[in-house]
Image 1 (cartoon, rainbow, N blue to C red):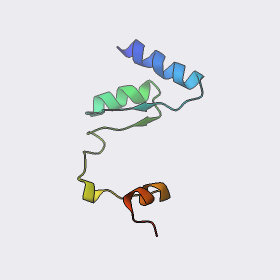
Image 2 (cartoon, helix red, strand yellow):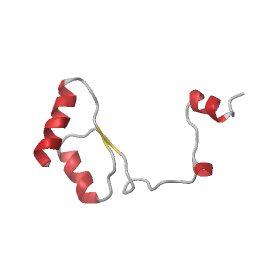
Image 3 (spheres, rainbow, N blue to C red):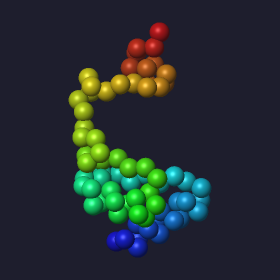
Image 4 (tube, rainbow, N blue to C red):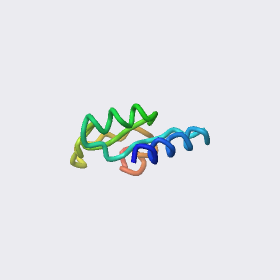
Length: 70
């Protein structure tokens, strides 16, 4: 599995892309993906899901969608 993920990361970087690892659930997985060169990560280990009322809308587009820009 490590070779498959590593080659995927390398391919993305060769294409000029930043690689996001999703679904990180423990420190070992985060460390392994960091070692393989992943640029960004998300998942329960880093930030558990939040209820909708706890979210902050950062961009103007998100505020428009939320009806709070004005």
